[in-house]
Length: 152
Image (cartoon, rainbow, N blue to C red; front, side):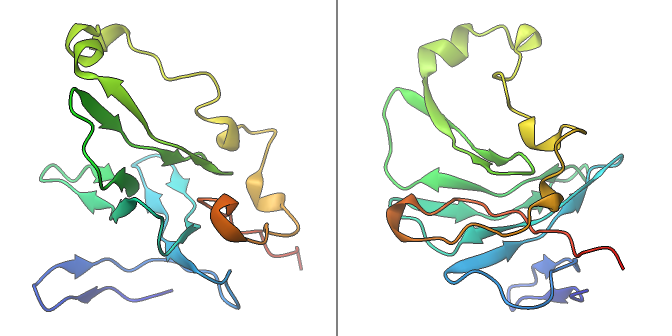
């Protein structure tokens, strides 16, 4: 357990669970969170990603949690960025959509793309992974799940 603390600007960093032992080189821990019904495990994410900046997770004024995500550093005029997310097993990349598509989209009828929750299926428990992948070069994974400790 990592106790919560305050930054110099008064921002509170909440307490969170973090794996013990070694972690993948070049990665930093992104804590899990409670959504009111389910605890979502944290994951290791790269410390840096070319052409992107990490937007840290936050709680809004209503107490709703907004997960962290990678945001492109370059603008794409006429488009809006849809952030990626960790599905419990891997990072699902974000993508651009045209302003026109957003403006004409029926938000009430929107459904997420096929496979958006693959890592959270009951029959697929990402915590059962024996070995985390070894990150190398530009093709390194954008999120690494934490293997569960073996049962005692």
